[in-house]
Length: 79
Length: 258
Image (cartoon, rainbow over all chains, first blue to last red; front, side, top):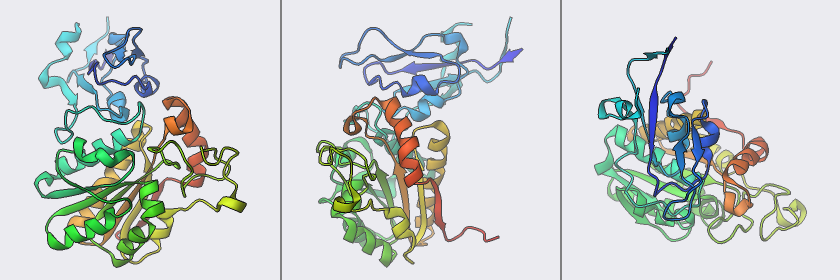
């Protein structure tokens, strides 16, 4: 089955670890890191990169606009 | 397939608008202000009016909005943003003028300015962030605080018998003949973010067409003031704020009548 593939890039130092992206992600890709950034926040990162579809939900609700989203134009076949 | 193969400029689908500065926002983690800032800036960028737009910053948490919005800004005295916007718009009628105000600014000390600007039908846009509390000063009760809602100055909950009823500014200004577009939205879910952006775009388009004052309220959270996590505060907002402040377009003079 063809599947949309995407990826996000989080600006670690500006992320405040509010967790809003974690709860809106439909494929549960995002988690908060165990380690902290320079400000002491647990920043968001992709825990399961293969599940990301590049739907931009996380970027839409991110209050600090730290998420950049990429998506492949052609869905890739899953084997 | 590697992540590096996906993260390429040609695959970019979402990035922060260039009209937001690189400064980290001064808001608490999870605050709705950040999304509201971004939506206003995205609309201005999409309409290509960044050179002709003047924003009026309020007093409150968003007092430093001019630090984050990379357009011409003026900060007004507490509650006076609609009055300042009136002046700017009358001097520069071909420019776009918007105010960005919180509920303490717009619904408390600035009630007179807001209502009279709406009643005069000034050709400006007001973006109103309502979180039901005075966030910046430590979570005191605001005119928009819900009945029974706890705040630092109503620790047993707002008692309407002694503290009065919450003020629904958006419904109030919708009755005035000077307003052309009045809507209430939220920014806590992707669907609501999309709707809010459409509404802000419409508000600016009505200003461009000189139809009158456009007013967009955004019901937001204040997780620090409400003493909750960002996720819990959004859920609390859905359960408690939305029944009292229902979302939707309240007035649209161009809406097709059935």
